[in-house]
Length: 328
Image 1 (tube, rainbow, N blue to C red):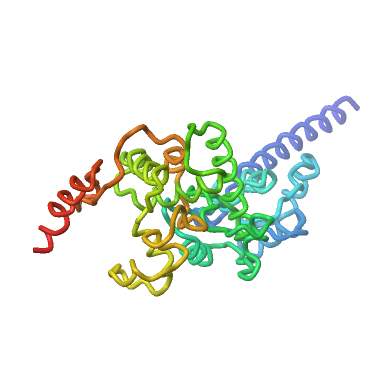
Image 2 (cartoon, helix red, strand yellow):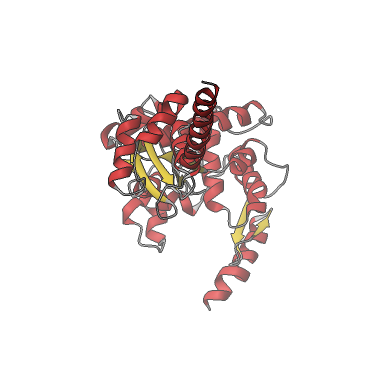
């Protein structure tokens, strides 16, 4: 009798050991995929369905052992829908990635100085992003009001997941711009020539488009503020170009400077009615805290930098040096 009991116990130990080894082998067995294979887990996909999909793709040999493991660890059955990048690591590690929602991440970048038309054109071409934008009510969709959307999208890189919507990305950009502008406006200097934060945003967009070198943003801001504070027109080409829209052929002409548009700052007093581009944080800070200077004029040198002048005589001399002499 004792021999029988010992034999049974021995078999039980052997069986347990073999079972443990098989369990460990299953836990550590690799998913047979090419490295970095993308796989979409659709809403409503359960653990068994997922395993059978992988089995049909010959990524796993069978499912019953994984079903046993899932019984021992029920958290494995909590699958989150999305697009995932599978690797040749263990089957279990790939499943845990899906449990934790570690989806493939895509990105969309709004570049400093881009205008709204350029941003919308780019986002419509973004990978794995649903275009749900409503052109006839875009401002309401993104901002929640009818304010012109130009200028309200903060330049940055925004990450998103497969089948996220374009509007959700732009809403995040708008929220970041609103927060950046609010913070800057609270720290603004005294005696600025604009009454609202929105006017500061308009100015920041002009500074952004006039800037060839990032280091010159403060001086350009100072010159523009000095102009407005002395009732001088801004007379800046980027606003004229924006007002021309699709009619601009890449070469600004004397006629363009004479013709009236709400954005022709050679013809209008003060600021244009809206921003003309998406300004950077640096441009916003320059707009609300420009350095003290006597500069009111500047001319491009041709290398991205500008020659700043206090008097019209100095400015005319700079124009002769950097513009007229180069044309002759």
